[in-house]
Image 1 (cartoon, rainbow, N blue to C red):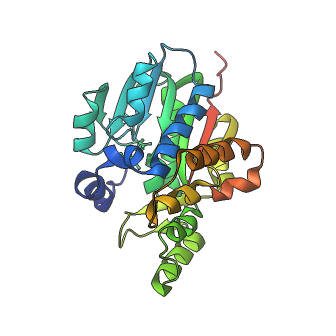
Image 2: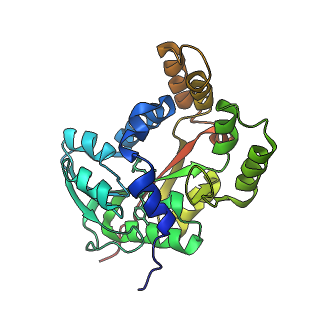
Length: 272
Ligand SMILES: C[S@@+](CC[C@H](N)C(=O)[O-])C[C@H]1O[C@@H](n2cnc3c(N)ncnc32)[C@H](O)[C@@H]1O
């Protein structure tokens, strides 16, 4: 199977522009994303030791706690400097989520916490999800993260940018097209609605699919407290936003307000 090259702008963004290693450690919404992702995954992970394939794992931020929890992690990422740094944490190799160089039925868990963000073509996302199903063992867990379609609406209020016409235009474009072209700031990206993410996992053959709001509906209050003049978010505000994320879980209508979404599904058992 021939797959198209990864967009060079995405490789440049992670290879030169941003330090992905600090994204989930240095900002308040990043810390919410890290903590909630851990909490949600720990509900579904099989007991350690088990084999985890962390596709798009960047510098190993999730691999780090998974290894500490006793899992055997293999991280795959297309960005050489990510793989170099992740090698200090676990086995790490260069690769593309759309064509994994891994045998069938070989991992208990496949994580896709990043690759779907940067693939606007639905055929590419289908390849990523079917590759996860192929490499996971029957009955294995696949967890896939996405950026929420409406995340930039909340984010640009927290930066207090949205009163400007060009920001309103840019956010309106993302919400109506689901794509950011990467002209300024972030890079080429795709923004999912929750029900769309769920149906993509189902279309790839996954069962028992559920979607969670990672940061929940109050993340942008924490981000605004951090971005706007003042003392920054208090521990009580952070803990309240984390509680809101948990309390919102039974209400799918609140998924639209989260910054990121996490979908989990199981791969089917096959008849011998
Ligand atoms: C926003 S980062 C997320 C990193 C980390 N998994 C996390 O949850 O914080 C997105 C990651 O996806 C990787 N990525 C982008 N396109 C990919 C692809 N086609 N296959 C595998 N990884 C990809 C990037 O190199 C980057 O490391």
